[in-house]
Image (cartoon, rainbow, N blue to C red):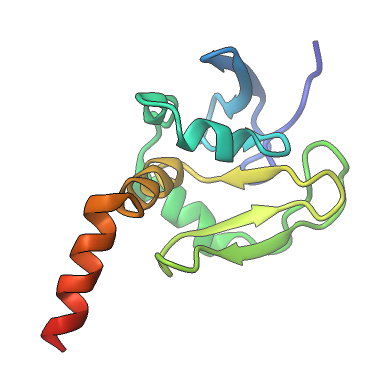
Length: 132
């Protein structure tokens, strides 16, 4: 069992399993570490947003106050990324191991964005586009 540290608040991460996929969640700030491709797999699984139990306000504060963020696995500087469809979602991605760090509340936002990309979401985008 690996022991890793939160890249934001330096708290300990606990292993959480959902649908046989193991992620690591900070016991202090409730941010979540996803190994390569886990975030994409979990976005498609119904109910997986229940992993994100943290306060979005805490996540937002940590997101805006964090300087350089190092990967909890590789310890290399992670890239700060923005969700192309929801510019309010900023997250960190490791360019070495391809892991992703989401602050509290961000996985729920990603999940909402994923749902909106379905048939209903595309229909709504067309309607919004015609209103301009």
